[in-house]
Image 1 (cartoon, rainbow, N blue to C red):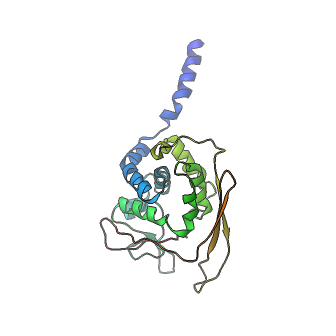
Image 2: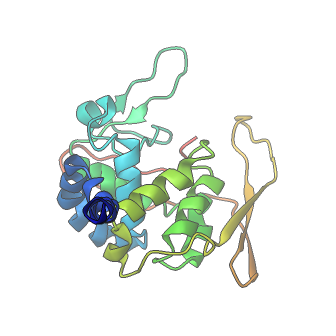
Image 3: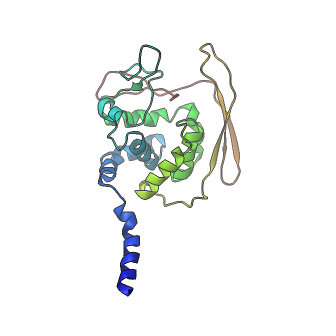
Length: 231
């Protein structure tokens, strides 16, 4: 009886380690260097970059990741490079890259667009607020998107790459996005007022009226430009 109890406790203790899948570990090992480089250069937490890459690309195994090297589901708005998918009826395709590393670089520059500017008010180690903020700023419509990113980060201890530690579930700042619809000539775009409310309730209001992007220089393909919208 005592042996059985010890075995059960040992099994429960070892469960988290056993739940780590090798394909996830291989993906992290392959791209952690580039993710850390972009954290230093652009300020996007490496934990967030890797978690998004894992989620959006199905750990690098999705059809789009395999055929277009697109690991982040970024659409081809304001894009002069090759396009993957889409059709003649107006459906917008996705950006196609010459190498997965091009996708990682474009993702870092993409998140420097005005839409995501409030995220840089957050600490680089605050992966929970970054995850929620990405969804609030419009990166994904899935209400469970933040939870999915957080689960990956915590299960694979990606927060350690940012020099942080696992956060309590209550330690999440909220990023509020207040939209003001302003119809443009295209009838499609609108400007947004953004307000970031941090855990100590300080508020910062920002208005953006234009989109400024750094040029994207791909590693292995022709010259293309980056965008600030992933609608």
